[in-house]
Structure formats: structure tokens, C-alpha cells
Image (cartoon, rainbow, N blue to C red; front, side):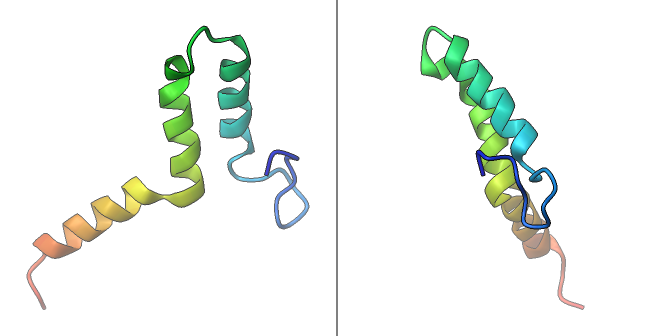
Amino acid sequence: MASGWGITGNKGRCYDFWMDFSECMSHCREPKDCSLLREDYLECLHHSKEVHALLTFLSLVPDL
């Protein structure tokens, strides 16, 4: 991932998030200063918040 190449040979979908996080880590005083950028990068990779929101929504929708 850190190479920047995606599966199709173009820039990876999360590469920009990785670059922002990496740049922050190289300039910050404490790693916690970059926690929001880390969270964005991990969400781009795994979509965990998106999946959680979808499952919560689906649990509230009555069966059709």
C-alpha cells in the first residue's frame, strides 16, 4: 500500500489518506496528534464505521 500502486496499476484508493497520515507522523510531537488522520486511513482500508452504520440501519428497518 505504501508504494502508492493500486490493484489496477493506478494510485491506490487509500494512498492519499496514507500520505496525509505519514506526513503528520513525521512532523508531529506525539503520535496522538495524528489520531484523526490514522482513523481516516483505517476507515478507508477497512470501512468498519461504514459497515457498522449500515448494520445498525438494517437492524432498525422492519422486515419486508
